[in-house]
Image (cartoon, rainbow, N blue to C red; front, top):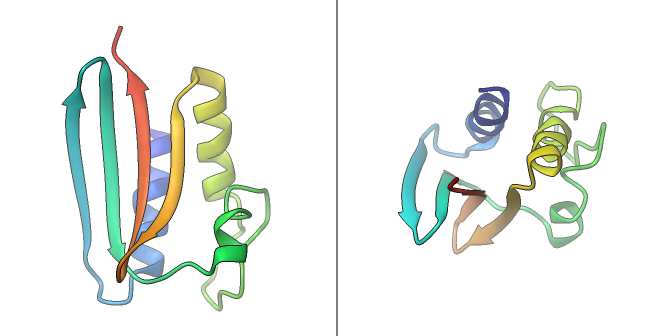
Length: 99
C-alpha cells in the first residue's frame, strides 16, 4: 500500500497536466504496475530519484523520501523498479513476481 501510494503521489505532484494513469498487467509470472504522468526527468536526475532526500531541481514541496521508501520496499521484496522518460511522459514501472 505504501509503495503504491508513494508512486502515485509522486506522479500527481510532478505531472505537468494534472493527469496520471495507472495500468496493470500480468505477463507470464509478473504483475506489472505502470504509473504514467506528463513530464520529463533529466538524465542526471533519473539515476538519483530513488536516493534519500534527493529532489532534483524541483520547487515542489516534499522531503525527497517518497521514492526512497519505494526503493526500500522493492529491495526488501525483490521487486524490479525503474523510472524513465517515454516521449513526453514519465513512467514508473514496478514488476512483482507472482507466487
